[in-house]
Length: 227
Image (cartoon, rainbow, N blue to C red; front, side, top):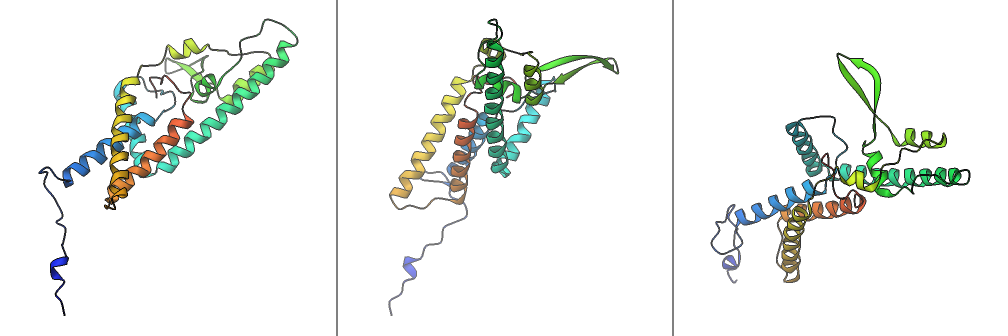
């Protein structure tokens, strides 16, 4: 009986980088792709925290949530998209009704405005004081629609909304390049019949989730400072 022991090779737990596909290379590629992809795809609501450290910590918490439970973030993005569409539809319906009565009506509402409201962008100051601090109340989508039915349209131009934004085109371009490089690498390995690690497969799942987030939050552009 032939000895097949020479055909069996046990892979070591760690492979050093020596112009080959090493463990450190896989780890670095997956970690960078995973973190960058999730961080840039997340668009958070208006933050009530004033300090940049608090906002950064809030964003970091959501990054951890997206890594551990990406379906929760995808569900939130889809919910905000549907609510923003509903808000814009109802506001434009009330706008058309008002337009039949008077000609001086605000411009048509778009999805950009809808996300601005759904994400807590509209805030009003109340007359009350608590511990010497003025109270700011965030208007919900339902409140904005109720006001529109009373012929009170809280219109904010797209330019004014974009004034609160920050340019992130370069950052997104770098992320796209990183993700594209890893996707091409994984597809190439599968086409040659080569195996992929579980970490690479897990990263690809997050890339798909991030792509869904980009679609749902496409109109949240340029991204707000709170995003």
